[in-house]
Length: 222
Image (cartoon, rainbow, N blue to C red; front, side, top):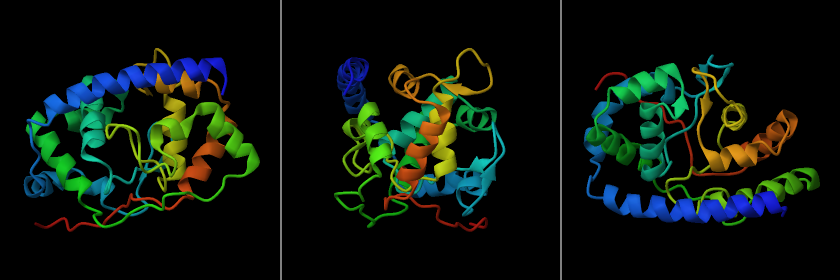
């Protein structure tokens, strides 16, 4: 593990402490999964269609969100609402949601793939990919099986769509663009260590792992 990655991990630990403290505070706003199901009408047109593709900022499948943790879904929607994650459609949707709406949607999607558990140990990565994962210390945050992050506000990434992961990883390297990019100093520092080709290798490996995420079709009529 290089010095830059070690320094970043120290920042991760400090950030996780802050996130945990905020998470305890946020727990006072309990999510209602049944209410979230009714509010998900605006989500199912993309996240409820297996294989559905987004064309911004390039063509890629929309992420699987059924089975993600509620704190991560909450954090992601709040980041879109604040503009820390730049995506015009998602910012518009997130901006229309109250804190309670977000908590309810998070509760719904967190339980939407209940009962699925990822294996404790993932399949071994090819040597070249293993070296990249070690360089980025990916398991240190996302868990040994990439489905048990050290903090629930971090995403599960095992089994996520490869093209989505690739676009997401690249977005952390975008600076100063008003329309695309993600503001996260930890992930930005990690992603900057890799070429796009290396990021794609990482994304392809993670996508091939068994995980807890799914795209579950939902009726448009409720």
